[in-house]
Length: 146
Image (cartoon, one colour):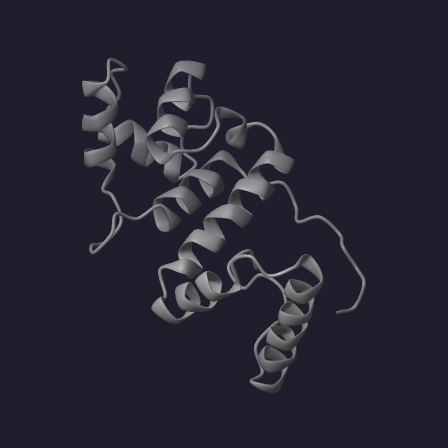
């Protein structure tokens, strides 16, 4: 670790929405389509079209209503502040990265075995994992937050 902790540059709405589409994926299949998202949100009482969501994802529209952002946040299971507050975005992305990692059976097994281990021991485990990643030529830290 080099000790630098410069925050990543703020992400655009399109970046944040794209990240949710890539990360919040139903079990056993590919990502949601914009049409699926639009239908679910519309069925919940907030009319929105798949083409409008696509324009938001591509950055061709960047000023949606609060109602649309709240509905998108609800669909993906994140707080509405995800779209407004970069620190919330960062925290949520870290949680999403953990959930993504837990989809891997081996990682899930390690996580379950670590349940109940003291914070001091967990820190030691993290150090061992970081060392193994270094030996394998992988970046240390959170691989999904880039």
